[in-house]
Length: 169
Image 1 (tube, helix red, strand yellow):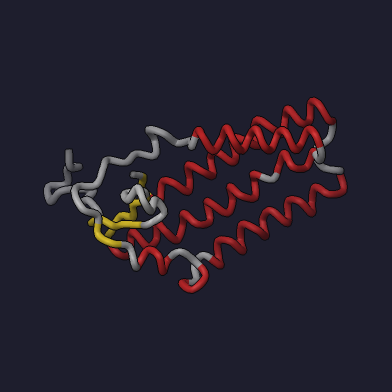
Image 2: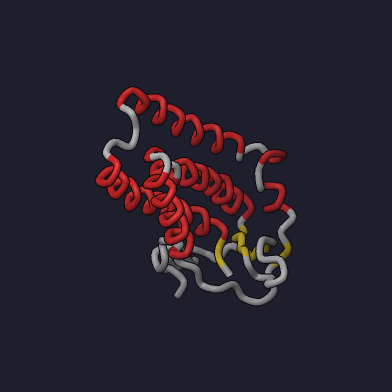
């Protein structure tokens, strides 16, 4: 089981790491990644995509917020989750790097930068989920049901400090 808010940054880190591997390799083999005149357009498109994805995810009817609100209570105690323990989704990183590098070397060098778009969109989805968790005092979980791993569940948010100001053990 995985904490929902941790899933999005982990996948974004995997996308950015795939670019960090595939872009230099593609540049070393093929030369330039983007034509010099296309760099401003690519950058502007990347920023626009991130902004639009972030803003659209804030509307209930366009985002997963409706799914957050219909999440079922988690049965049993929630697992301890730490983004620091495993910040990278290794399987996604391997697949994304292999596909990106293969297509970039065989067809179009610009493809080496396409995981940037996915990474920015995944980071844009993490914001509304974190905001929803804070506003509702709950923690979203994913993968508790093996038959339907996409189904979300919620648990109460654990206290970050006790009444005496000490972090719970």
